[in-house]
Image (tube, rainbow, N blue to C red; front, side, top):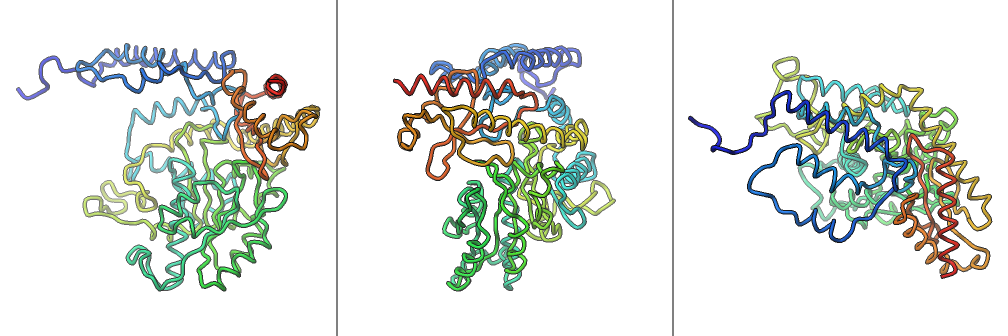
Length: 494
């Protein structure tokens, strides 16, 4: 009889065993979520705990699933990143929506490859991506969008399409000819100094290199200066290079600044430039009527990066790239080997495959957690979630402004507030304040009552708090301000 060697463990579990294991996992997660607010936001690991996890050996014999689950409970769960806590204000990391947690479980049970084909997961993704377009006012007719790991992959895909279009307009094909031709003018990409680092990574991966990036000056609100953009494009054309794309922001990671998208779109139309908008964090703000004017011009973008795993609390990884010209996007990536050829409405055919629009062949069922979370929220829920965070950020800014030893360092456009601890005796000494605030940040992160990170604004070290948790309240913001002030006062006399 052909089969496994005697005693070898099987991955299969009988239905009752699986049910017991899954129920135990659900209880564990439910207890964890229920106890988050009373626990420290972040608890650093000891050197021994880190070493144990990294150096743990894999045994020859398998162990019972219950023991594996217990190992997770004791070694992993106590040292979470912290973004599930309502006083976590670091980076742009949201907590997971509970329905999204359930969706990840259900998607894993099906475990389809979402490269394409005639199965439900593909149509779920089509619907969920269209909902994203509608929420932010992006045109749906003729456009195409797909889910990716996050903003970095979305940006890479969008800029590849921009590069492909520029080459076609100039009479050559980058897919067949590459970037090796010495006689072609170098491509130029425009971005503000506050543009996300994934834009530079994408330029490097696409063979353009960091030197292709022209960093455009910004105004006092950290937004691209449109006059400086026009001058930069004119200067590069005069120097013999080929401007091809502007990567603007609909909410920078540092401050939440939204570039003047409508004016930039005018420049792009006049200069034959692709307009890419990095809205990974901030684009969903366009769903709030009171803020819609801030996003004027977003619908004119050729591509948008948007991360539902940020403001919408969809569990990671769930990013999206939206492209106005779906045909062009397919031209940029479509490569169908013989073993994957299908015909629409025959066999496993279905719609054109997602693998023809991006860089992945095997794709997970990311769409289910987005589809379920958006249905759970509805349009009004998305609006209220984002609007609530906008209001909380303004409240935090007010607390900072009212404190005699705090100093706000930027405008608050979305849900990010940048400030610093600045006792009167150190005002005007930026070097001393930079060093002090770095220590404040590190102490607050390690202490547990709250968590925030940093950025640099006009050469100054800034404490940065991003409000993204659906359960954060005004009392959590007051606690953050108190711990920063107390920590700063203690460190300032050391």
